[in-house]
Length: 206
Image (tube, rainbow, N blue to C red):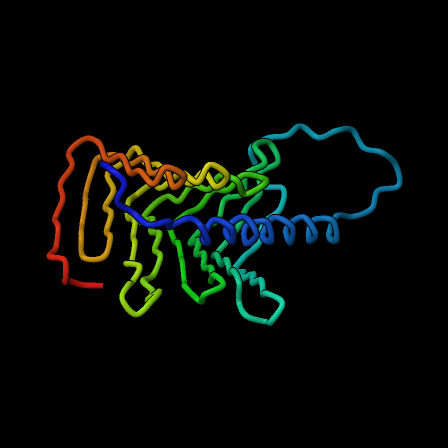
């Protein structure tokens, strides 16, 4: 698939690591505050794949210097695993607002993020949306949407991938494929496998 999509990640990815790092920082702070002080050094514990801290029904927000909401992450439960240094979040929902007020959001039944939030996996009913916005009297940036059971975001590389079937909507245009590799740097979306496209007339839909 040749270049077709606007820059979905330009603003959203700037906010995503910040929002997720807030989750990790809050969990680490809670762990330090609730860990009992021991009078003598204890033997190093055997690290297994069990959570070393967790949070339930949380919502974490960050604001810009004017007090406007910049990013928010919510979840039913978050669990941090010491052996992998990954955090797992049930019913994850992410939201960010750029400097122009444009809203981007993502959600899934479950999310996984590594320690520096440079890699995020959305699993189960995964959705990423960048809302449409009028940028001038004669131009509107169309709504952009990714759907699938698995979306893998590489934040620093500005890449989103999936080896499972995906649906991509750009304005009124709709694409489906068995796999996706989208690179925001090159502005190229590679749709592979069984690819189907439904192209709307130029004046159709937002």
